[in-house]
Length: 267
Image (cartoon, rainbow, N blue to C red):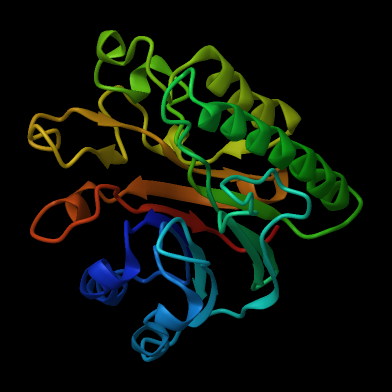
């Protein structure tokens, strides 16, 4: 079973690329972030024609998350209860969606950017992550009590290690690498989640995101901010993982690359 996550940076702008990528890769479940569309704007029929059932959570032209599955899609949950809100008026943004796919609970998440260290959006980001950690602790308890394995995957907007950015000097005093953000990411690992991709794709120089500006991709100036964090039951089934850097190339590419894990059969 192959599971992937990908910030597509607008599903309507990138639908041709998504279709082509799915046609080339034997992916059973794809978690998508930053769909940038409402439910009625999502190109559902084109992806259903490839054999995927779809769950999408999108409210406007910002954010948006989805799960595509050809191995079952059940118990869909759009959003997280009581998640911190943002905006005027404040709303619970479309940043998380969960579904059960072939006995595994999949969560697609798009963590707030934070913008700048002293921006109110940074406080929102940290509060959002703290709330997610509380949910993760509950899900881990449920798994220990005999519940199903799960994974939380997507664009975390955090580079948790120095090797995850092309230059720590460049990112000094910028978001994504601050101690508070890294502590929030580490808290999820301390709770019991496992970064299941890193052992198969060690750094340095391994990234999932490259800015469109200043020839960042061509100059290998990237960041590793897209992760698949699995519960212990999920992690023990992972037999391989990869970052599809090639998909960042060419006309119309997203600024993020897909991240893929291969699962073996349950023990």
